[in-house]
Length: 229
Image 1: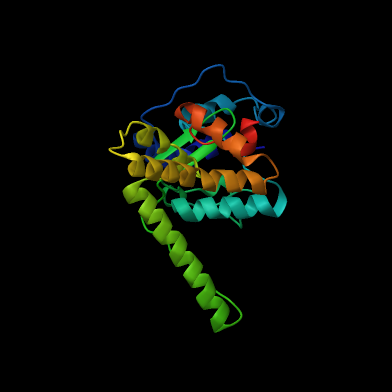
Image 2 (image 1 turned 60 degrees about the vertical axis):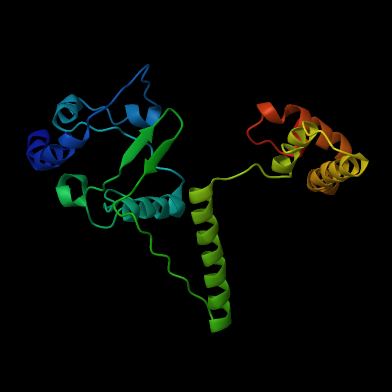
């Protein structure tokens, strides 16, 4: 059992550290699961008044849970305490043990941490030989460049959908002669090839899938070809 007066005094600095950052909090139809109800001991409302928090169930199980909590602690600059932690107990938590995030979104099913303690991530790449290390570094570099390009220039639909969305623009063109009309038809058929090929590789009729995709692309954000069937 926790000695509430002692815990309240010890948690006071933590409450003062949290209070300025808890600017917006909304709750509707809050329901407690069995694992949370077990923690609702007599007098726990005093703790709720002392420290305003949102309780989120830790993800995963066993060692996977410990590893995920450690990853979140590193990303936010906090510390893991309790059973999943090392030697830090909840009554020993100090303000410098708390992590920071630019935004935390908690819903019924998920919890999302945005913008950790730092804006720069450090990736450590290792391997059993220089050749393997260099290969991993190249892959990481490619991933970083792809991410940077997506942030700067945006992204497009995959599976050939972006090319299919170009076809209506070609339909609006008025060819000046028969040769240009044939050229436009060749380009239109070429734009369908990636989607048709991907669908054929999945074991379905490519032309049918490409035509269905072309008709419904205005309403689609992203959908695999097989889901159109």
